[in-house]
Image 1 (spheres, rainbow, N blue to C red):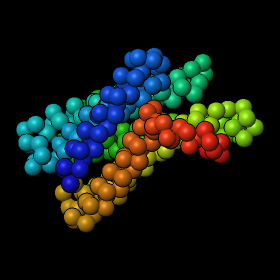
Image 2 (image 1 turned 120 degrees about the horizontal axis):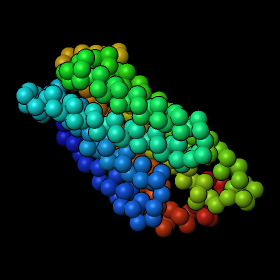
Image 3 (image 1 turned 180 degrees about the vertical axis):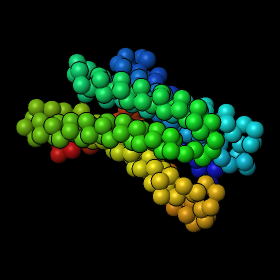
Length: 243
């Protein structure tokens, strides 16, 4: 099960780098935050998830892997919170406060994980709390994207919006929703099966890993279409305004 996870981390890292390069060329803080989010997920997930597996990471390096992996993941989810603020309401005070509060919570929980749980894999209640905050970031970003998707779809029907732009919000809903499903599976395992990392059967591991990988791949594919749509896809959208 290690190989698929490493492969997915590579895909997400490469995708994040590609989005960051585009953001650097074209500007725009929201795009920069999306690229940083995917880059952080790709780089941070592997050491965070494999820290408790002595076959993947030596026991002596497990603590460092947990600390580093979760630090990078916290940066990524903080970037997603900033994306939700700057993309959907850059002048909105409540969005700014919410984004900063979520970033602060992620940082505080990361510190608490080191002080209270001493970075012992697979983690305990502090890590579960951090997972809930990460899920909250995804829920917020997903709700904002879905709301704009509905608004843009209505505008397309009366000829007031570009179907390609409207479809982009659908794809944003899909990539954020895919990540939300992946983290929901991870949270479910942590709450319902706290001994999963040591006691799970091969069949249980296969189901969980397949679910997380499938949701993450849907997310990656949707983001690719949103930022790097092939010309045939664009022609199809422009020829059918009912996106």
